[in-house]
Length: 131
Image (tube, rainbow, N blue to C red; front, side, top):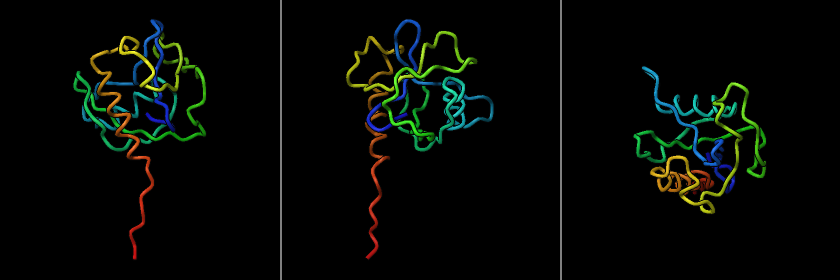
């Protein structure tokens, strides 16, 4: 999830980063699985929109829009008490300033960066082409 020029990422106890991901439940859409993953790992309620790409394991990346006044400058947001105990915090990172070795699933790193770039296009204001 892109917030301004940062990517919302989960920080794990081994000091690696990753995105919230889940397998789809029976009869659950990819968008609903993405929404559930973000909620379960962060406690944040997001609006899931366009698909951005596919990870190596077959999981889809989706653009998500967050509400609640976050601007990407927040540092080390605590994870909810119900979240995975291996999660240390929620961070806003620049995915181009970290090394692939810092990504929990290194095979996904390029696809995550590509999705981050694609999400910028979705943030651009639409031009009104009315005469």
